[in-house]
Amino acid sequence: MLRAIAPGVHVHESEFLMSNTVVVEGDIGVLLIDPGITTGELEDLGRDLQDLGKPVVAGFSTHPDWDHVLWHESFGDVPRLGTAECAASIAELRSHDDWPAMIAEGLPPEYADEIPMALLGRITGLAEGTAQIPWDGPTVRILEHRAHAPGHAALLIEGARVLVAGDMLSDILMPFLDLDAPHPIDDYLDALTMLEGQADAVETVVPGHGAVGGSEHFRTRIQLDRAYVERMRDVLDTADPRVSPGAPLEWLPDVHRWQVQRLTERGVIGER
Ligand SMILES: [Zn+2]
Image (spheres, rainbow, N blue to C red):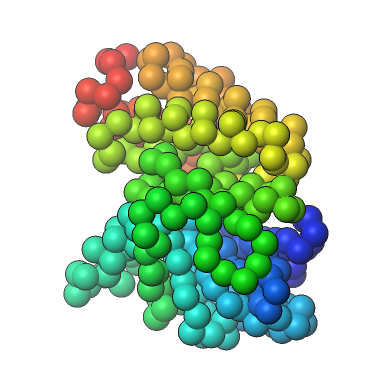
């Protein structure tokens, strides 16, 4: 089901990890951001778009993780865009003969059979430094940075004042750092500062996973995410409710400990 969150902007929430698809209405059709997740949900979304009466004219993936590069034939064969680095990253993965198996390894078992692989990851990279999505619709600015994943981009739908955060600024997930990046901590903090710089332009924030928030949530989530990363950097325990005992997602504290362990092993942060 599509839910309007701002003029000309709708969200579809999937069952898996509260994944958000964003639909932006343009002049002749819609821009589809990170459509997901299961075949049934994508078919539902296709029907909702039909009811809206506008075809899909473009897609955008905020980053190259499997749950953000899905597609369904009912959306049509239109340009599916991402940053140059996002496209290069998923193209590299797809260059392996056994890429479907490589992706299948990381899928949540309870959804694995329902996730459509056929059109996964066919992303066209925009030229480096492209400032806005090229399409017939409202201005959507691309805020590329290096937190979470290669080529990760947040999008600012200017007129509607909506920030699509990709896998950042979630109320249910703490920051997932790109553990293989040369500077995962600095990258994340830099990205938060960059997003914070947009605060006056943001009335609504849509995380890749979790609840849509208002401008006050945008600000508090930046603070919470920054505190999480800074305490990790400073080798301090965290009081982040998303990874503390009683966390809403019971497996998340384990991911937190694993992040700490990997960064410690790499020498990115000091020993505990
Ligand atoms: Zn995600």
